[in-house]
Amino acid sequence: MGLHRWVLAIGFAAVALAGYASWQRWGPLPDNVAASVDGSVIPVDTLNVFVAAAQRSEPQVSREAVLKGLVENRLLAALVHEQDDPSAHDHADASRVGYDAKTRHEQQRFKLIRTAFADALRVAVEESGTANSLDYLAAPLVLSDEALAPLLTLEQALYATMTEAQQQAASQLVIARYRFTEDQPEQTLTLWDLYRRQNIQLKVQMHNLNTGFIREAIKQQLTMEYVFYWFDQRSGLSADAVAAVDDCIDDAMRRDELLHDLGLMHDIHDDNPQLRALAAEVSQEQIAAYYQQHQDEFTRVERVHAYHLRVDSQTEADRIYAELLTIQQDDNANPGEAFADAVARYSVAEDRDQGGALGWIDRDSREDHWTQALAFVQPAQLVSPPFRSPTTDRAPYWELLWVDQKEMGYQPVDSESVRYRAAQAIAREQMQQRFHTLLAEATEAASLRVNNEVL
Image 1 (cartoon, rainbow, N blue to C red):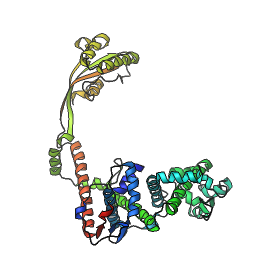
Image 2 (cartoon, rainbow, N blue to C red):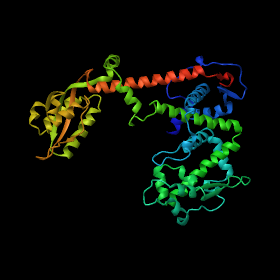
Image 3 (tube, one colour):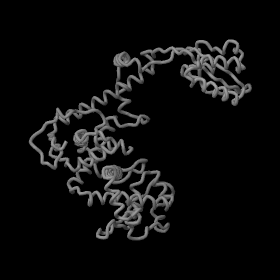
Image 4 (cartoon, one colour):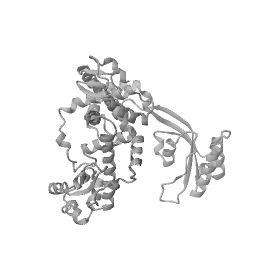
């Protein structure tokens, strides 16, 4: 998820949610607390971090909207908290292309802090006098093949990741020692620390003993660690406020898990079992009702009236196309007349004297010839680019097309296309409604208090 989208995801739930009017409030809150959810507080300083990050991308975002999102995330996270097994996320799944949960948390934390405190971090780096995070190293990196090969070489290519024995050994091999200030105790980065933070593609680079990549990965990790060090020690936030930031990040991640389980977080190209199951249950009556309410979604071309121009070379076709395109861009010209004139002057087709008329092409006749099939899908009142003939039994030729009329209609309500699209839309609405209901019930059952003074 990109930075802009992620900041908004932290601050807002994925769909429109319940308003403040339905929230229950019992008693006042301390000045340093923005909200309380079943006794779990969101400090004002924590809210300020998320507001700063959100407003950097969307300056008009209000503090109230961000707090509302954080509270709703906590409500949703509570719904999956009892089923969550933290130990299941300690290590990356070797079969996954992405990152493990701990690494995703670190990535989101880094993006949030870097965005919210961009100016302060820039000043801190300038004052430190270090332009490269590798300058914080307290000893040379351990990147020799002798040290790395036994731990990174896959055993006869039978495994896609380290074996358990290699993982144990990698957790003992310190590859980087560093400190950000002289009074800070020396910090270490093990090979396992670095390895577990990579996705499958990046792990391949490590298995190939690409020391240039490993060095760059260490540099990026030290940059992240410096940002975390500054945030924890130098940002001015209390330990409670810092911990609450991490809690809010975890809330957002659990919310995403819930939305994924509900079928609301799948990419459009991914298989979505929940959506597929709901769509299969949609009745023909529901589809008919949806069709009547959203008929404009099911328009289709019924027939077009078209002309064509044929030449024997691509050079000639490109020249004519450029000429017609120039005329088409002239507001005072008549592109249709220009196309007819070009047909009379240049076309080598037998119907040249008839203006290259293809006549009316409907959904059946479009299958009679490739030229008609192409004309059927061309925009009206726009000259088409040249198309090369697909024929192999004679010399190739090139066609330009002009559609002057297009008649629209509607797909039949009982067509497979209408059923598929309407069922998918209805199923998505049902999934959204389930989510609304789930959130409304969680909101109703929770003890919620909001400090309106901080908004």
